[in-house]
Image (cartoon, rainbow, N blue to C red; front, side):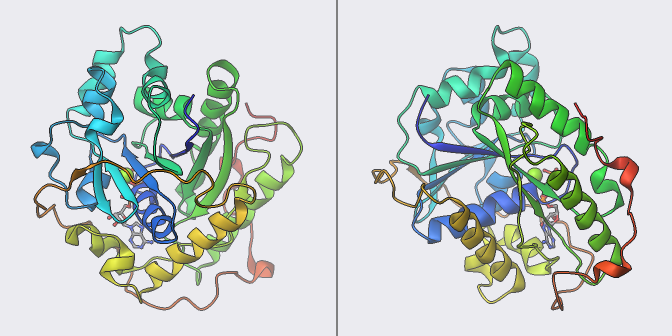
Length: 326
Ligand SMILES: Nc1ncnc2c1ncn2[C@@H]1O[C@H](COP(=O)(O)OP(=O)(O)OP(=O)(O)O)[C@@H](O)[C@H]1O
Ligand SMILES: [Mg+2]
């Protein structure tokens, strides 16, 4: 297995901030000196579009990597200093069908990663909003899982299923897999509901400490990614928040998340194995991707990230995975 640290960013719930987190956390880490490679494993190709890459004008994508034995490095595109993207394309939706009859179909990405020596410190995989074969490939290939969660009522639905899937993959395919973190995205600090959900999720993960589950050591990141319209705008400019609006709340939050992430990596500092500079294709002519879905809340400062816990009541405890799951 290649030595590059690999993280699957996943949640089968759609629109919770997976792609935004992969793009902007990845870029913030790259700005801090890490060599980062972002893998777009979603047929929607939102991560690819986020960087202004036209998915229809590429020689190689994750589709070719999974279905045609193409090395990941052949699809690599250097998008920013220290930051590389392995793009996706809509055809990737067909890859699930094409891979279905292949023996070891859940482990194709893992084999592709193992087959190469990567000049990166970190590989982050942006997963589609499902628990299908593409996500299974990400879970089989990764050492860690980061779960972005949007703290509202429905966000907790499905968390049990996700944990069950991670547990199954850990038992059968990838013994070292663990959930390393939960990041709250589109957090609205002024709402009681956000505080309730954060409290419920924190309580759940705390209760599993030392229980030997893949999520027993999961960190609930203290940095909350606040709802910020600039984060929704920057994909339509083909860049990340640090370049689009470095003084925005979104830039501040992803910067803080990167700092917290790096502080949590004691023993695995940036540049630990002095990787060589990535040999990637230059980015193709930037396209004008479809405008990003507008965020519903205005760009406004958030008073405090922590809520008055005394005012919190259980948001939806029934939606949380049971203590014994799975
Ligand atoms: N903190 C934020 N503030 C405002 N808008 C945001 C924020 N995070 C993400 N968005 C916007 O919300 C939408 C969904 O975010 P994103 O694409 O990152 O979610 P996702 O989980 O990757 O979705 P999918 O499941 O479809 O892949 C996008 O339009 C994005 O620009
Ligand atoms: Mg996405």
